[in-house]
Amino acid sequence: MKKLILFIGTPLLLIIIAGAALYNTAGGQDFLIERLAKLGASQKAIDPEGLNVIVCGSASPLGNDPNRAQACIAVVTPEHFFLFDIGDRAPLRIAQGRLPVARLNGIFLTHFHSDHIAGVPSVNMNSWIQGRDSELKVYGPQGVETVVSGFNTAYQLDKTYRTAHHGADLLPAATAAMNPITLTPGVAFQDANIKITAFPVDHAPIDPAMGYRIDYKGRSVVISGDTVSTESLFIAAKGADLLLHDALSEPALAAVIAAIKASGNDRTAAIVSDVHDYHAHSTNLEAQSKKAGIKQLAFYHFVPVPTMPLIEKLFKRGISDDVILTKDLMTFQMLPNSEEIIVTEP
Ligand SMILES: [Zn+2]
Ligand SMILES: [Zn+2]
Image (cartoon, rainbow, N blue to C red; front, side, top):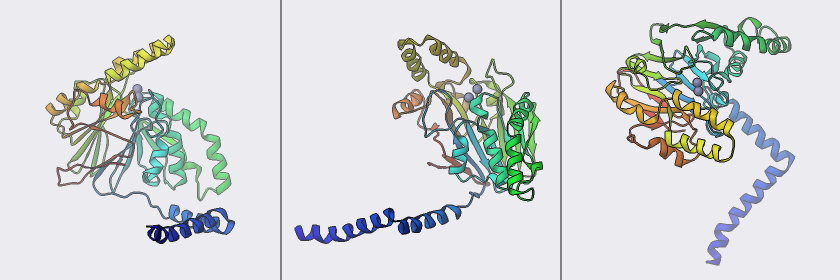
């Protein structure tokens, strides 16, 4: 036994000593960083086939989980890249998912709560630096021009600094800004392969608020944005392959409110209680989804954020295992001429 330990232990010991020498000497550190930098620089943006939906943010503002960014859904095809809302922390997920920001075609906003727009200027700037060749179009309901012109103003000096520093050939000022496009319900964007349709949702008192349906080569996804369970959405989503819907867990939210009240913070308890009636309750979606012929229902924008597996169980209460609780960087791939939805966990 002693011999065996000696036999296994000696090479392991040598590896540990060699590793420590690499990590703790200037020459070793230079060797390691050179290789790691090469590995990082060789990573290319994803370029998948078919209609791909990537969750770049699954959280609402209620609850902090570093593993969940606020609302963000990416739609990537070989010809298109669109983002639907970009909340706080979502720019990091977009980078981690190696989404192709240099060819970002546009951002669609569902409404203008901060958890849906906070990451917009950061993604715009990164896309410009990566080589986007025109102003970025930002689509949204009435009010989008106020949001976009505010971001453009806030980033005006940053743009000037970068163009002056790197030169107008690399970073032309003319392509740095965002261009707002105000939508009304109906077809918002269409080309030979893709159609994006905006429809009204019910996030009262926030009005207007929109959801979007994306159809690509016979496959489709619907993104709810923030809404209660509403008939207009299920009419728009009829027969879709995938529905990503915001979801509120009544028992989880009730526990959060009770805990805040018990701590004596009545002000915050009152604010959180107001959230009750403007998101869809998790138990109200599956039957309607089945009735509308939707093949896969998945929840995102969790209220509250499932910061522990117990809260995920509460979201699952009263619904079947067919419903997916999304995570950041979960992907759904839908190939043309297929019925299958390939779900990849992060
Ligand atoms: Zn909202
Ligand atoms: Zn929200």
